[in-house]
Image (cartoon, rainbow, N blue to C red):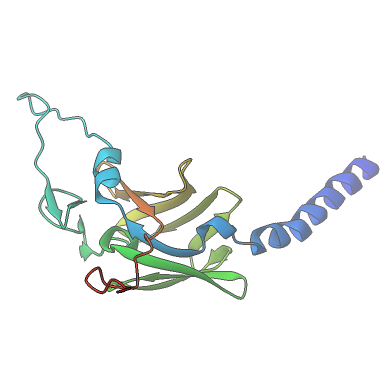
Length: 192
């Protein structure tokens, strides 16, 4: 019995020791600049089932080709008022860099967020070679964000918002690397 307890505690200590080392290396494919692809994003949206008796009709509102959640507003209503949607749903461009062992997300024109591995003030973030997951809960809702590497080199972001006493809202955003542009204007061709 004592040797079994010793083996289990040794395994637990080894796991706890290796976990921070494993979590400290952010995935290299995630780092860099990303631009929203409106066409892929529109095609990737999760279809909602409609139970209104009039067929599968639903209304939606989009800004700049990006569909907004809930149809009429960009934020989920909670019992305490309006909660802001995650920045990744409101940006068209973002940059991801490392800052020590953390990841810094800069959402152009929207804001910044520093993601630390593990549980940081109620926000649980973990990553591996193909995926980063971040979860948090407020008094009005639960939010889960998953950043995954697509097979075609894209960044697939899935955001699940579960308001208390309401159905979940799942949205996807597809980002790709920015296309390099020519530095010389077309009307300035070399003469010779």
